[in-house]
Image 1 (cartoon, helix red, strand yellow):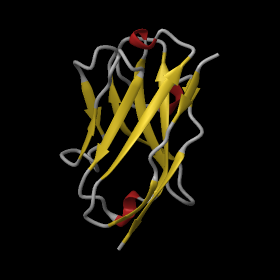
Image 2: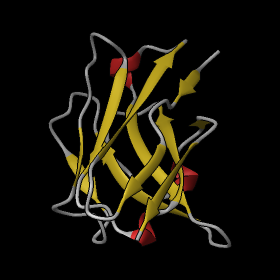
Image 3: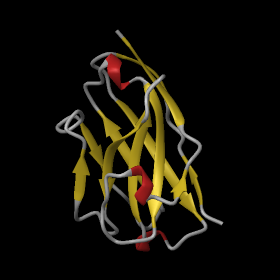
Length: 124
């Protein structure tokens, strides 16, 4: 059974950094592309970042480009998301997602496995 866990959320001041991480189990991790999404209060789930199976290709939402960095460690089955220069509009529940294909995708419907989410609050 595929399980994704996202420790690392919390409260951070605007302009500050925060590092999330996703730990995957129950899958052949290197055969999966991974993504991060977020859902702000009262809004739909939106794409944040994605990474292909070997880390060679990454994609970002325009709203986070240049501030967030997604990476992966296939030996540890983890996908960190380093978030810098956080803004109050970044307040949301952040979700890790996995898709059993090599390539990246930005649509939530392309991902079949989801974590429980971790809450990030950015204070102004």
